[in-house]
Image (tube, rainbow, N blue to C red; front, top):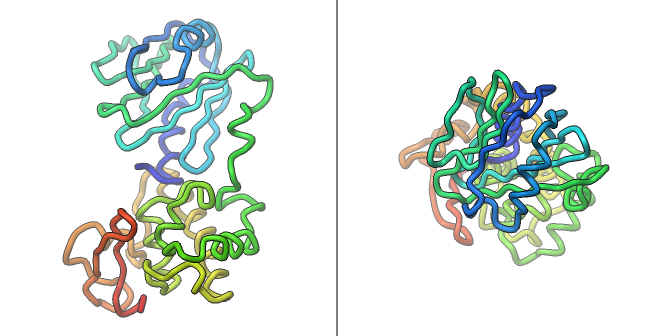
Length: 264
C-alpha cells in the first residue's frame, strides 16, 4: 500500500487538471471502490466544477473542487491516479475519470481495495478535521509519541508504527527504516523502550517522513543507498551499515526486515 510520500506523489498526478473545467464524468457506480458513496451526487456535483487543490494526510487524499465540493481518495493496495490526454476512453479498471478539455484525471484500481467518497462542505469535511497529527505536523510531538508507546506497552514497535491512528502515513518499509536507523528491533515491546529510544522513534519518524517527501514525493526517486529501504526487499540483502545478512520475519502479521547485529 502506498505510504506517506507515495501518496503525495500520486496526488500530484492530477495537477494537470487544476483550474480546468470538468466537462464529463465517467464512473462505474456498482464497483466496490464506491461503497458508501452516492455516485449520482458525485457525478452531478462535479460536472462544471474545476479542481482547485490536492491535499494529503498520511495515506489519505482529498481533492478540493470549486463550489465547496470534495473528493476523498484512498488508493488501497492496487489503486493509482494518473493523467491521460484527451480524448480518453476509460478501460475496465478505470473506475472514475474526470474529463477536461485536454486532460483526463483517472482513478484506476484493478483489485478494488481503494475507496472514493464525495462530500459537499464549505470547509474541510469532518472526517478530515478529525485525522490524527501526521509526522510532518507540529502537533506530532515527542510527548505524543512517548504517551502512545506507554499506552500500548504490550504491542511490538513494528506493529505500533503501522497503526494509522498514531502514525498516519507510515507503512511497512518506513517502519522498518525508522527502527533500523534507531537501532531498535521490531519485536521490542513499546513499553520496554527507554525515554531516549522513544524520542529516537519520534525524531526519526519525522526525519524519514520529511526526507521521503523531498525525494520520493518529488519525482519517485530512490532514497540514499545508505538507507535500509533499497536492501530490504529480497532475501539475501545485507545491512548497509555493517554488511550483516538481513533477517526477515513476520511480526503481528506483517513482514519485518532488520539487521540482527545492529538491532539486537
